[in-house]
Image (spheres, rainbow, N blue to C red):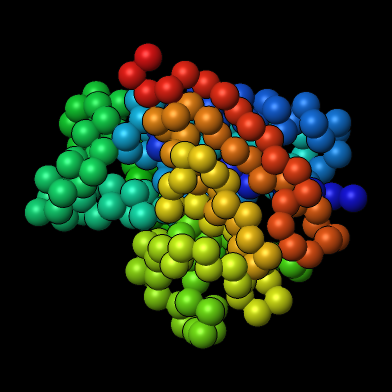
Amino acid sequence: MTQTFVIPDIHGRLDLLSEALAEIAARSKGETGTIVTIGDYVDKGPDSKGVIDRLLSGVSGGFELVSLKGNHDAMMIGALRDHSTMAAWLSKGGDTALASYGGEPTSLPQSHIDWLDRLRLLYVDAHRLYVHAGVDPGTPLDLQSVETLLWKRYPKGYSEGFGNLHVVHGHDNHPDGPLLYEGRTNLDTLAWRTGRLTIGVFDDERPGGPVDLITIKGAPAGR
């Protein structure tokens, strides 16, 4: 049995990301699998730079790392390209991201900018579709808009997936989550603020939602 481990919105919490990767390695017991990070690596938390450095260094143990783009990652790249959007990005948590690089946009390494810019928007395996925010169930995958993939919020209680695929996403935070439905799983528990990160564990041979959840508990923001 191989497994896919899904890490939701990190938002600059290098401490939670590091502990999550260590816990996945410990639980896998040398077996290979896939780690999917579903975006929002930057903003709000204290160490956006450290998070990207950590992901750029790769993962050990034979895992394949699949990193998807989140709306905050896209906002950061947009602000660096078009400074007319800089104030909007800074007001949505970009100030802490910029501070982690020393406070100046010119301080960001080109390797970080290129990595964020090239992140894929979705990932599909035999049984599931992984995306930052969501998908339009009535639109083919190759016609989904960037706006939908990065910004969608599902109606409360919406339980469908995408055809036969179970949708795994974050973006719409629920501190008392995760939210588990027949057709979709929302893993975002506002980890950057609550200090509680939930990792979904999926059996690659079994359709549907997670077979296990790993909870990483760190200090809430501001402590």
